[in-house]
Length: 436
Image (cartoon, rainbow, N blue to C red; front, side, top):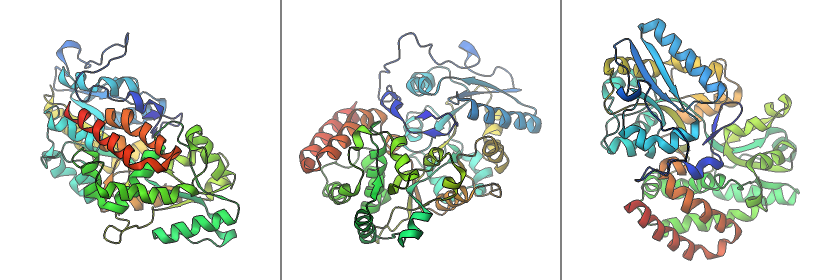
């Protein structure tokens, strides 16, 4: 993940370096100071009036937003939050050794597999007592997203954003296009767009992460949420016939993608949607950042990736979610619990969203009256989902996704004919990495 100037967490080229120590030895950058807790060697708050937080919110926008949340918490509780902010990527690269040492009471992290990994290692404290108080503020899918493999809760979500197919309303109106809800309708629309001299689907995979989002949509629409998360967790073989079916469908869709994708950034691909040269673009809602003209941004809309198998419909939404966890042995546990409870309130979410309007609240209780139409629609899509995924490199081991999946998917985009040998190669490498 990297932070854009606006402060929105967006997947980026730094994915290759993420969490290199998640499976064992961390390849820490030379000369980079090791992450340590605010309390120095003591590792956390020494008194009951202070709660320490390890933060990856190094960009100005989220940093300010969190500072305002902590100020409101102090006013309400009398507790001071001592924030230990580290560079976003450094935090992620060193998180494994940080959590095994003397971490802060509470730390920023991501929902999904990455949360479950540290929960299973005993490096986080279950917070079922917190969820007893905040559970009513969140939809069922968010509750599920916050649980470890043991069924206990470990995570408080704060904000999220969806992946979907984005388009210009004026283009659809002018050409008479209808939003597709099934695979056959999507293919038919792509063919019509080609006839109309439009690039059906804008695509830029130079930074190697956007293709992972395309795979995710195709796989959980084809094989369902349960199969998808098991595949991401290394529990299903990449040579499984179900995975092959996903790639067969992608092969069918690939000719409608913008050519030369591996040499194009996501931002450049977005510009073809801005300039009405492309009909659609599959990406996260941060694509709106590329629409600098308000009239163009007001013309932007999106729809969920169409149904492939009626058994799964459109019930899964990819919605990367950021939030907080409690470390294994917080020095001020009662204070940490109070902070986690506050972070799970609509009040905390609204403070954050006021400072960073590029994302939407994870809570169903947050005030959405100030949302833009796009934010409202994003919120409705996420809160109405039966299941939420995070993104391939959050739902799986980052070392596997960066060293194996990113180059493999780029190879597939260049040459979709060699799928069987590609999947065999992925499976061989997966076995080695997941065994470490």
